[in-house]
Image (cartoon, rainbow, N blue to C red):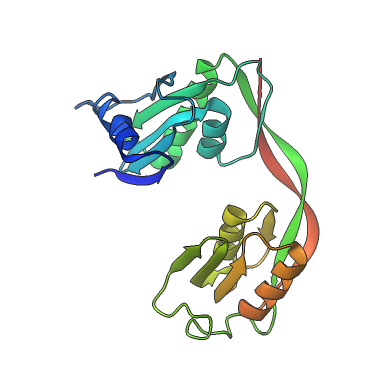
Length: 222
């Protein structure tokens, strides 16, 4: 059953998203169905489910970034809005994403390679206060994750999971060298870094240290 994750549409257009797209085939669909988008220019949406991924109305470069999990340098003249539909019952999601990236690069007529890029960011360092602030003290009792406007809260996070949460909701890059577990956190996704430092130290017991790391990037060229 489809779980609609993000839909920036009115309800009639949501119906159009699902009903107008080709129905899943009975057999294994080993490659994604990729077409230039038929949606109005300002309409777009995503859907996912068991062995299913779908993007409609997004530029190809954006979909490549989501599928690869890497920043994308897109050096082609045309970045078409696409309708992307992929059912992969015989593959894992990671296997399917590799196939999807390859086929999407072929669709836009490019070539792709992964290159390491020096990227500035912040290393998460646990302090003696790591995990000492309770869910109740943060107003997160019985909550796994809470997002309200720019306010983000989460509980029972490993240091790695905290970095993933920050990378999802902040513009900066966050890295870890430690496997510490577990802590709770509250922070504002829009605040300046100086305020974020205070929030992470006070709620999660984590200190930020400026650093630079080699981060893989997907480069798409002719």
